[in-house]
Each structure stands twice: as C-alpha cells, then as structure tokens.
Length: 112
Image 1 (cartoon, one colour):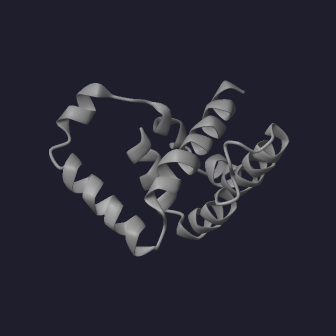
Image 2: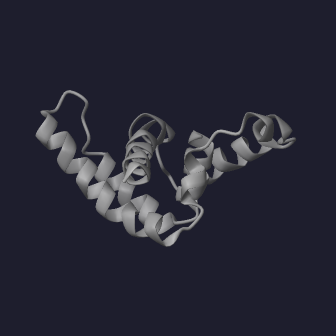
C-alpha cells in the first residue's frame, strides 16, 4: 500500500513537494494540537487531488494476488525510490510521516 500511495503522490509532484515541506514541521513529541495543525495543512493540499481522482480508493486496497503477480515489483520500487531521490526528498520522512498521514486522510474520507 505504501508503494501505491507514493506512486500516486509522485504523479502530483508539485503537491508532493508542498506536502513534504509541511511535513518537515511534524514532530511526534509535539503537542497534539501542533500535530493536527500539520495534518490539517497536508489534508488541505491533498483532498482536492483525492476528490478529483475516481480511482483513489484503490490506494487503500491490498490485493495479495495482484501483489505477487507483479513481476517487476522490485524494479518498480527501485524506480520509485530513484524518482524520490532525484527530487531531493528525504525517503525516511516520506515513509515515517507523509505516507501515514496521507493514508489516515484517505481512510477518513473513505469512511465518510
């Protein structure tokens, strides 16, 4: 699921770069209000993209058969990592902060 979310974000590079800048201010030891302010700012950036993408709900699904059927999954993962690196984005920030926040936003919208 993380790879699918990351690939979706990479299709929207300008927004991704804005999200990364906002996410740099996120600290796990910060008061909850500060954390939610960061999440809110990220949500305001990505919700218009989510609403415009009819296939976005598929980002939350995990198809085990489809996952194993991907012959080039490792190649795709490496290519995605290279694209992130080329943009100068901290991969750890993406994995530990940005993607979990995006997934939480997606899950909240799907439950609506």
